Amino acid sequence: MAENDTLPPLNDTSSPVETVAAGNKIPTIWIILGVVFFLLLVAGIIVAVTVMVKNPAQTETFRDIMIIFMAFESLIIGLALIIMLVQLARLTNLLQYEIRPILEATNETVSSLRGTSKFLSDNLVAPVVKANSSFAALRRAIELFDFRRPK
Image 1 (cartoon, helix red, strand yellow):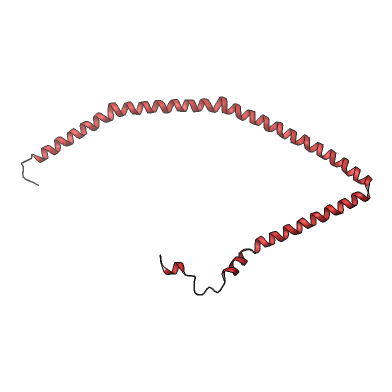
Image 2 (spheres, rainbow, N blue to C red; image 1 turned 180 degrees about the horizontal axis):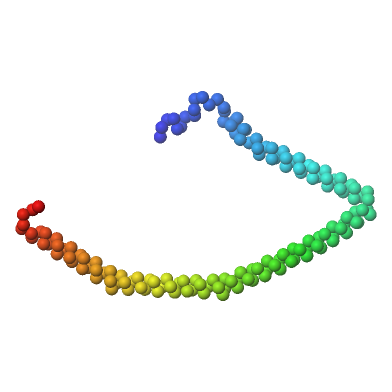
């Protein structure tokens, strides 16, 4: 390892603390915005509670509107759950009756190809390799016993 890799550059005048502080500016801004949002939320709740305590008739109306809204939201969520359940049943059906036969046919094809390749290897490739090796040995023996003049 070279010395230049382990030593800091000579012209760098910033300290490690300044580098870390410069890198933390964005998270500090987000923290400040989060605290401000939280304080505004608490202030809004306090104002809403005081208004509701001072005006009980409007509070009852607001409560009734919220109950109707929550009932409507429950209906929408229930409908979404039913649709999701139907889609899940369709996916299960697809996997059970369409994908599984395709996978079984693919496994059968692969098994057949494996048997065919083993048969070809045993009955075609192995004899050809043996014949070629025998011819190579015979050629080498002839070359060794060749008393002709070298070329």
